[in-house]
Image (tube, rainbow, N blue to C red):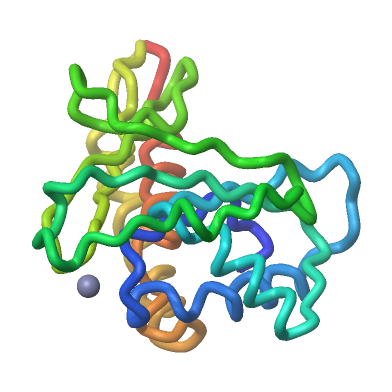
Length: 199
Ligand SMILES: [Zn+2]
């Protein structure tokens, strides 16, 4: 399952929200076969995340067998109490990414009041600012309007099937902390795609 992950989103750098990431990356690596054509796993999160991942891999002598790219969101000062705001730019030593392409440094688009992460003909993926004790981000995945009719009955039938599948998955296979959008979003999206007809 973890080998199918293509994107990871980290909301903020409090330990209970991201200390599991190095372990998850190592698990993905165990389930990967070296493949030079494999696209990188995109990891999105606040500024400082890339340094954490690189240091964790270096200190633990871990070598990941798949490419990954870390895209960092630059927070604004009004996202947390002033005394909690820290600049992490001094951590950036200009090192070259060990695997995968160098990620992007993403700044707030003041007009949209969000960060544009990905856009293609079907989807738009954005991050937006949240106020917390440290800078924090939410992520939204928007599906663009599409042609065809939604077959409601088929969606309901698929929903029952996938609910059951998901119940078994979270009951037996996944630790609770991992049962978030990583799993729900792809399943729901697949379900919805299958319920569309062209007439
Ligand atoms: Zn927190």
